[in-house]
Image (cartoon, rainbow, N blue to C red; front, side, top):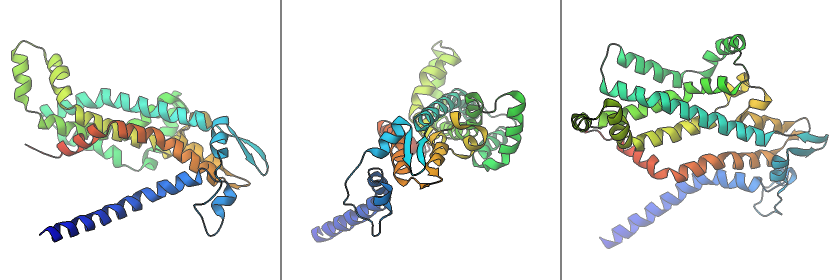
Length: 285
């Protein structure tokens, strides 16, 4: 029995090592590329032994990229700030709108409630090109083209349905009797919602907010069409590294490392809520 247990541990360790290598190796290789020049990256065969350089990161921070045709101006740090503004504002607005809506869908059954909820969810999976053309025309007419407000509004198609459906499941798992007991004690509905329902659903709200932030941060198509260079996030700003003199792989790798740092730090900070939120939300009863 001991031999079998040891064998199982060895097999499990091998499988875990293989899985970690499979998923983490691309990130490791991108990290290595960010400290290499284009010549080092493109050499054949590739090698993990090289003289590291910080030139790629310096170019991103200073906004100046040296190419064969001269100095190319970059707006990467502005793009990074744009991503932060758009993602944080979009998630904040979605939480303000979706959490009360999720509570209403969970607690009150009204006509067409499921149809409305499913329609909202369908916005998340609709192809962006389906709405881009009419949105572009409408935004130009009402003055929202190339504005933070317009992009935050469009980002609701990404963040709001996700938060609504995840948080709705949590409110459904919370027994209404707890809220009723609190209200019998003389408290209002709003106070019951803020003091009882919200704290009990907080793991789900945190998980939904984190996932929505990641989806908003990674969005590409909406900002590509609806924003000019001064409003574009890092996902679109990375196109600047494809120049007439070639593709700047080192700067792209450095940009990837910097751009994933906020989401990675947020995920590590909120991993307890994320794991608890996604696991408990799947358990009914």
